[in-house]
Amino acid sequence: MTFLYTRTNTWSSAPQPTEETIKMWKHVTQKKNWRIVQLPNGFLQTEYKDIDSEDWIDVTRRETIAGAEQAIDASIEHYSKKLEFNQGPKVVKTFK
Image 1 (cartoon, one colour):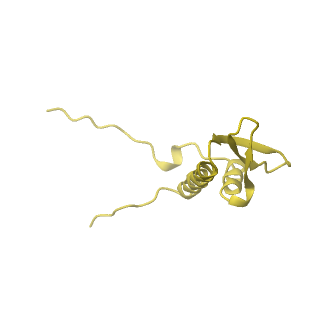
Image 2 (cartoon, rainbow, N blue to C red):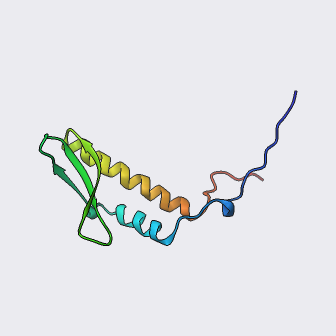
Image 3 (cartoon, rainbow, N blue to C red):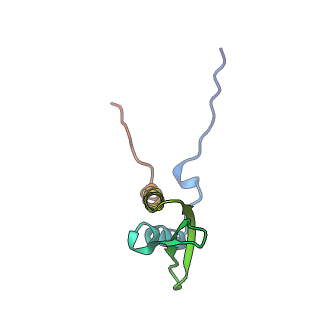
């Protein structure tokens, strides 16, 4: 039987997000920066407010308000996890 051992990269070797990226992640994790608009075709579009301007950036389209709000909540959760991971790897188990 043959075992293959590979070398893995350490945390510090991974590309780190820029301060601008982290600022955007923090911005989109606040629900007050989101809105839902109805389009002419009846679909609902989720949008978040741009940090530097008064523009709104479209993200997803859904058929129902519940679906649109769920998409916003999922986006907030996604970016919250990115911010948490940016603090470094999370220890899930240690051995003695």
